[in-house]
Amino acid sequence: MRIEEILIVRHGGIAFGISTSYIGQILRVPDITALALSPFQVCGLCAVGGDIVTVLDFNSLLGLQKCERKSQKNRLITLISPLNSFSLLVDEVGISLEIDPDKIEYLDSREEVIVAVVHHGDELIQVVDLEYAIRCIQKVTVNVQSVSEKNSTEIKRFTQSNERYLVFKMGGAEYAILIDNLREILHVNSAITPIAGSNPEIQGMMLLREELIVVADLRRYSRVVPHISDKNRIMIVERQGKTVGLIIDEIVDIHEFAQSDFDVIHESRDNSQSFEIIKHGERLISLIGTELLDAILLRNEELIVTNEIAATNEKEAQVVEVVVFQLGNEEYAFNIEEVAEIIDMTSVTPIANAPAMVDGVINIRGQIVTIGSLYKRLGIIAPTNEDQKIIICHTPKGRVGFFVKRVSDVMSITHEQMHVDESEGGMFSNILHLDGGKRLVLLFNSDISKLIKGAE
Figure 1: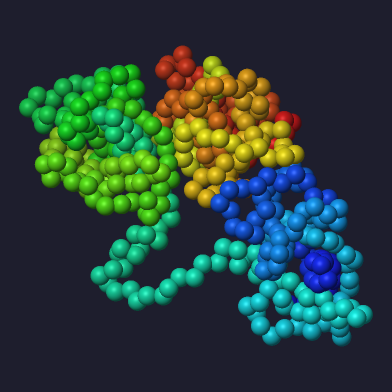
Figure 2 (figure 1 turned 90 degrees about the vertical axis):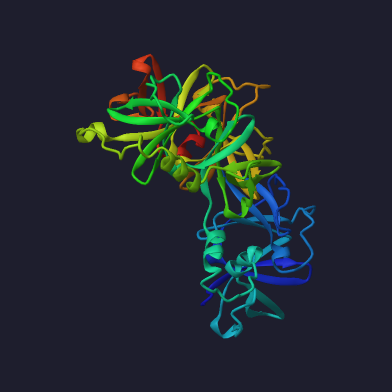
């Protein structure tokens, strides 16, 4: 590591040096929004040049007393790549200093925050390795243990990344199914032809784009009393090359769960069925896993046939899954690949000097998520007292959430239903023509991060 120039930062009578290769700007301290449950080195968030950055207390990174933030000498130092998501709150900034190779002494240890000492007149300046200091904020020590063939499966299970699940209701209780097992979700008003002599849960067969699909009532199979309403849906599930439709009471939302969220197996009263439980806050959600889906397929295998969809041309075969939601009196949609989860409305922490399209931030399981305003972006008056949902989306710059009036559907869209949006502005990629063209839905472009930028 060769250091050519440093910026001197002072804490009391101690001088530290930061390589100028990391430094962007030196600013007066703006308003900083504190964050609950954050590491002690984190002061909070602030807006700099239209971007929201995490403010770190420079003194805390070094194990010193925190910056008091009362002096006129306090400054905010912004950092450049690869540390551009952070900024430093310091007691006092001094001069920048070009390094004379004869006056710098590099330390041998590579596991220390101080990597060198510079002799400057009668003063010794300790040079800080910022990358190492910031990595130490979230450093976790893991005890090493041997892995046998017996426990390797269990360990692998708990090291997998989060996966997305559709959460739904049956009989007042909540259940979840892995999104990867779902093909689409339909209204129950689809035409279903009864099948004589079938199992009690089988409602019949339906024709979906020239494919015959057996429809089963998951509520009856799970011994749950059905709640008949216009919220009832049919989940089209694919497993082992076969397709089945499962009727449920209503869709709740989409969530990401880690394997650590899963708990003990819960047996039904007659011990004929078991569900793995997901703990989400105070909610207990029963998992509809692959074993249960396979049991339904096996129980009705004489009715369920292997998928043989009629031949279609390339355009007709294109299907896009979308999440349809409502803002004001209109409907819009995101591609489901861009949706991480859908959560209930929660309070938002405003950010000082944030861009106009940003409402603030929320804390989701310890992760800070920026909340953008589709209402402002589209010029729609936002509801004040109405219970809303928050759709959390993936973007190249991290997660972004949006308040919406309600989530209408999770559905598959064929090429014939998609019409390119030729209007100026480029906010939408397509206009979806649903229900025979009587229902028009605007599909947002894939780069959702542009929605929180200022209006062009």
